[in-house]
Amino acid sequence: MAELICDWVPSIEKVRMVNSGTEATMSCIRLARGFTGRDKIIKFDGCYHGHVDALLVKAGSGALTHGRPDSAGVPQAFVDLTISLPFNDVDLVRKAFHENRNQVAAVILEPIPANAGLYFPQENFLPILREECTRYEALLIFDEVVTGFRVARGGAQEVYGVTPDLTALGKVIGGGLPVGAFGGRTEIMDRLSPDGPVYQAGTLSGNPLAMAAGLAQLRELERINGWKLLEALGTQLEQLARQAIAKAKIDVTFHRIGSMFCLFFARGPVVDLAGAQRSDLKMFARFFHACLRRGVYFAPSQFEAGFISTAHTSKDIERTGAMIYEALETMPGID
Image 1 (cartoon, helix red, strand yellow):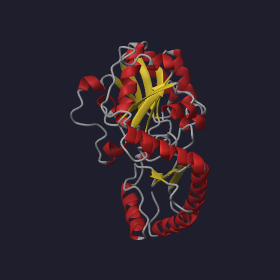
Image 2: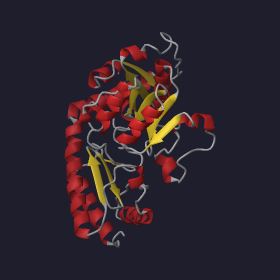
Image 3: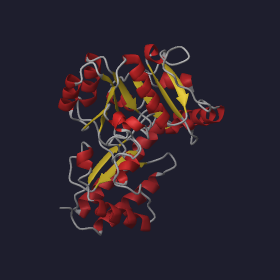
């Protein structure tokens, strides 16, 4: 498994297995702090990195869906070390680095945020993050728990051509079993115990069952060229969804990359958490239940991305497109 990850994701020269995406991001943060000798972390509003204390600040996923973007039980001292910025705002990134010179250990983000719906990095956003991290000697951490091996064999960093210092992985690499992993440049990973002073361990990390299941899953994806198949199905869904939206004459913003998609019940553009939060949640609820009655089950939150799998067929996608139109047709326009 380690050899495959390092082969498919060139930015990862060494990798360590853990048991969840939360463990992976938590370990990346600790390692970044240990490597740089700094304490502060920059993250982005709406990006969810698991239930790590320091990262539950303006988070996405369930915390956002239930109206509690932060969590009880997180000490203020941890929050004080986390700088949360609007996604895609390079000016505020530069300002944060300037005002916290020699204090920022790392920037962590979902390169394609998928926990506040789904939106994308604008042109040059990721390259500028890379430049600023290099300039201020901070680490760039990509949380690819969702996008890793999903949007491309090498993840979002392959799609956008930007190289992070550390990468967090999860989900698919366990083949349905609990799993996580993180890796990056050798000089950084060598700071981990037992070789270095940054402690990390886990009784079940890298357990044979999860590794075997994950390896089988990834090899099967490679065998069937799952990424080509999912892109074809995603393209079909996008075409049908956009046709349905146009026919229904309703303001819905549709986003897709590969097998990931989202319908925002708001006018575009949606490029950050603030844009996503303009969505009409009552309209989404009506849409969700209208689709469910017709046998199509979307994620039950405006702030969750949808996913296509290799088990879906072109016929499934065609039916989904038809149901999207039927559901939208019953709704009034969005103000």
